[in-house]
Figure 1 (tube, helix red, strand yellow):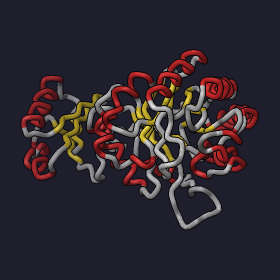
Figure 2 (cartoon, one colour):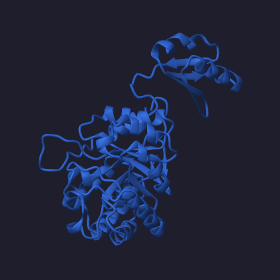
Figure 3 (cartoon, rainbow, N blue to C red):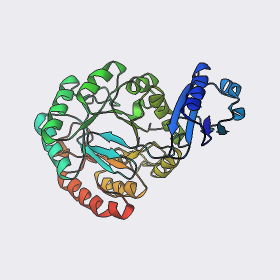
Figure 4 (cartoon, rainbow, N blue to C red):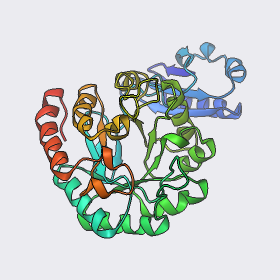
Length: 337
């Protein structure tokens, strides 16, 4: 529930109510504003009803949070959350470009792709050291060696790095090397993994599952926030429908819906969303126009030889052209790259 305090409520009264909420076994939240102090109480609805805070002389109003997700909802957090990965900011009018190859393949491949990403205006380097693949015979990534190489290349080109973690046992290792952790579509409802990334002090890019509803994505994010990490970026990367013209169906309507329902920043991944190189740029621009706070794009110096996702990876010159288009387009939308 949301508890709005009266203007005359001082810190002692606020602390008293926070202690009262905690004493009931509920999670107290303190959100001081410029005009009003707002408190939150999360937990069992039956216990919430027992609080009877409406009768407190220092409480102005009490409102239940009707959505099943509490911490990610705008009800408790009306202002946009800004998530930083290194010096790159996402949310609150800030727009960030995340780019890089699908996978860490070799030092020369990764370094060339990273330089291409930075030249195009990318603020964060992406690449997978661990690759969850549908086929057990596909390239699975270089694991710890790939993590080390990714961190070294990120430092060399001056970009923070984000990479996927697929096992709870690897969270600490990945967090040691990466500036942000990615939870992929296949793991969006791996609740043990969500809790694990929620316990580390690193931003998390949470991708929408292939068959997940918007509410499913928000509830997955709730797991991370409930575990203590509020630095979460939601990623729309396409869902599986009956359509076969593209790899997935990129649900751009989800962007304004997510922005309305949640305070968390939203990025769009048109590479996985379409699976087709020629569609990445138009859908990237469409994602920005739909209100996304950033993009996640795959780029490779030689897509024909890529060990994974070559058909959807942009050539460096294509990413550079996209960067120039974004530079021209974003100011019109009130944002900048």
